[in-house]
Image 1 (cartoon, rainbow, N blue to C red):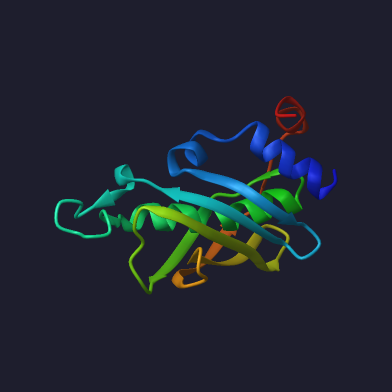
Image 2: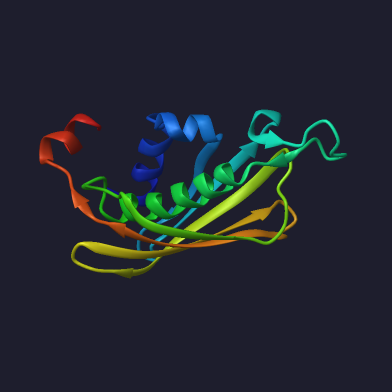
Length: 152
């Protein structure tokens, strides 16, 4: 599969979690092990909406979800949908608050092993301001060939 075919598949058959998170895959570079997601934060993703002049603060779990999705998508794209990627651990550093709006979550593979991948990611607003960074360790769990074929 080419990067364009992988991108098409992600966006034609989005996972329910991606829909809930408001995430869409924008760019895939499997040779570099990198992906970019566009994440749309809505009022429903926020707390502190009544007193915050920017419409609320995105709850940290959604920020973590965007970063986790970007990092996992990098693995799934590299493996061409032949693995699932359960997180073994994830660390997020929140550097600035996110508010309703558009964000870019980038995820990349730092190291790809036989059964484990080490991943990193960052979240930025549309001006390039760094909102959060993440690192993760994920299991590379092979999927049966039939599961991969059924998802096409």
